[in-house]
Amino acid sequence: MKFVNTSYIILTSLLLFVVSCKKSPPTPTVEYKKSKGVFICNEGNYTYGNASLSFYEPNTKTIDNQVFYNANDFPLGDVCMSMTIKDTLGFLVINNSGKIIILNTNTFKHIATITGLTSPRYILIISNTKAYISDLYNKNIAIFNPETFEITGNIRIGNSTENMVQFENRVFATSWSYNNKVYKINTDTDKLTDSLTVAKQPNSIILDKNNKLWVLSDGGFPGIPGGQDTAALTKIDASTFTIEKTYKFSSSDASPTQLKINGTKDTLFFINGTWASGGSFDFGIFRMPVNAEFLPDIPFIPQENNLFYGLGIDPVTSEIYVSDAIDYLQKGIVFHYKSDATMIDSFKTDIIPSYFCFKP
Picture 1 (tube, rainbow, N blue to C red):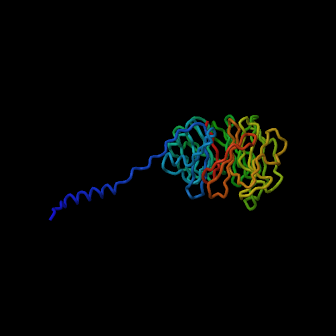
Picture 2: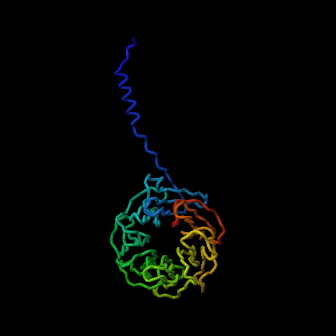
Picture 3: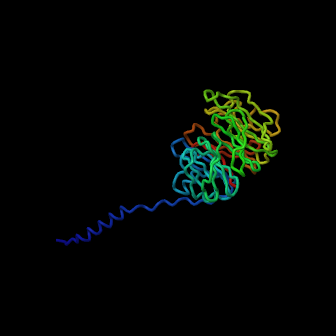
């Protein structure tokens, strides 16, 4: 009978067991190093925590999706609302998660996270050591230091705040949710100093080459507190903070959003459309010179059967980016146009692409 070394068998079995139980090495995260391009904030589905970040290189027409997750191996959170760049830092506003994620704009690597916010919307960099954060539900604008990432104070507004723009030592903030105000803030004292009444639900604001503020109000919708108002575009002198002209939309169905301006700051762009898919002859991207006497009545880029949702204008080339949210469930599409509306490219992103941030 052949002798069997049972000790050897037991030892071999134990080694095989240990090897089989050993965890596989983690999948290495993707290393990115990008040049000039466009960051695209994909909101994701509300409460699903599937927000994401895409990066598009116009020179090569290359789109990379999920760049933050691929570089860091963890997700952004719930609703990627907007993004602001300062030097090589990118500040991502994650609305429903109540936080700001800071990343390196060259490597996409996570640097820090600011938490404890209520419902942040947009960031405005005031100086090297000061930035403002607007908020949908908190009645204050938060102040933070973009070098240390610390919350340093609050500005009492008394209502929600949305888009912001700076002129000299003043910041002008719209109050969108059921409200009809534009607020003026002194950046030296961080105090609210004045307000103007405009058409209901001012959702966006820009500053043109003549130091005129332009405020776009969607007018709300039937059943909201105070009732629906007619949508309007309001021209305000930034120096005197007085209304110069109000352009009323002719139809109560108008629901304009996403007011932007071109690189030379002499032409306005906005979306006029619907929350439902499907187009109309008067839906799409509209273009308007800042010296125009009347609102445009024909779309510069017709919506057709798309659902235009986000709009961005390259501050250098004035090229146009518009997103199609499709049905708010599947991955969206971005259309890229020359400044004369000639199509350059189109590409798929992730769910609900909504905000464009241009990396120089």
